[in-house]
Length: 286
Image 1 (cartoon, rainbow, N blue to C red):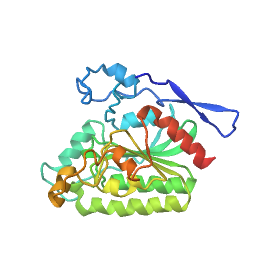
Image 2: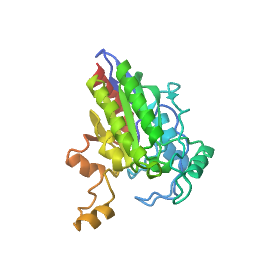
Image 3: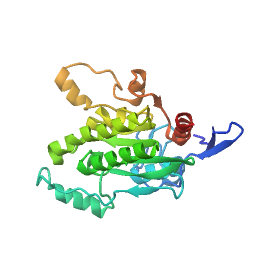
């Protein structure tokens, strides 16, 4: 697959153009299989890294939070907020293992939550950026994740700065019980204030986006974009089939299926994502 090093988008002045690189900075390494699960070809990690972790066959490998920040934020522009707000085991959860042990192990691996928020520029335009990281308890929404998101939405509304969300989640975090479920209402209220302030909100749905995250903030963007082949839904196909006894159509939770039925607005290859977001920022903010 031949990838463009950069693409051009309109700037405010029609006679000018802005070069939008495929990535903001060089992407960090991610965990990869030996072969592509779609086409079976042997992978060369450094070559795949230069292609934004998209195989020649079009398969999009899952990326973690650090990689998404590197992809979207202009070099040197990322400023993380509220990294000091961290999770705690409030319910003394023990199954399948102590929740505090999960938190401590993730912290040793450099992760302190499933959501990171902060400010950046994207193609020169200021944005608030929220990024889910599936490595932390399956990207589940928790008290801290909800607090970071709500604060970011409120700050974006107050400063009239567009908000870009990258979602990858299994839903609400069971280890925090109803306290995690309450975050759906809190985040949606903050998002409602963002909409009331007429501040653009762009949601990028990646593989997978499920549960309360898809049922709430991830599908409430002014424009909902999805990566090709991303699994998007509320609950898994096995559970739906057990509950309904229905024969489910093939690929019914894919990004392409959701596009056909109006759940998402655009399916955008990763190598075109920054360019498309830059165009949307240009369109919505003038």
